[in-house]
Image (cartoon, rainbow, N blue to C red; front, side):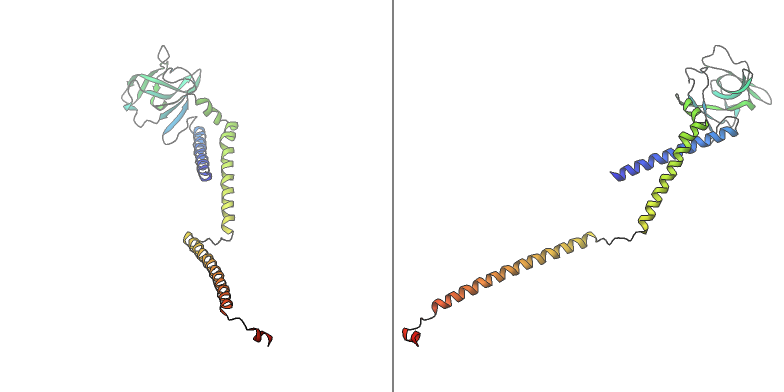
Length: 241
């Protein structure tokens, strides 16, 4: 049971470490890529509005993949791109309604599934971040936003990593101490069986010897008694003499 518990704890700790590593990577890459985290060409993004409802909702996380060839995009694809919203350059994720091609460039007219009209500005090639893969993590956006704060990063990522390394250090010290202890001489199973058999035979032999001695004593007593009975009695004259 203890071994199973140790295995389970180790699996959970390593899973936590991998998760912490991925979140750390997302946080740092996000800072370097204008707020867009990237890992192997994929970007987890938090949905900020309900303009694409019911495809995905506010505070969901969607996974977006980089696009190598924009000309492979089709009407109906959902793309993430930079646009101007309320006077600020922000990320937006909407569905392609129309593709505009020129000799030197390509742009996209987009619209949110929940919106009644198309977006005011087109999405140009230089603004495209990626295409939605169809993966959606419902309601995980708030958790991701918290992990990207200093407080959340310390509590959920940094602190568990410190505890993990302290635990591994403790295991290393325990193993080192156990290694330096003198090894106990342990008899193998066959040796234990052999010794047990020898002890049993010795006990049986000793018991058999005591029994033979007792029999021999009884036989001697019987012979002495018989010899006395067979011996002739002395005559009165012999007794007087």
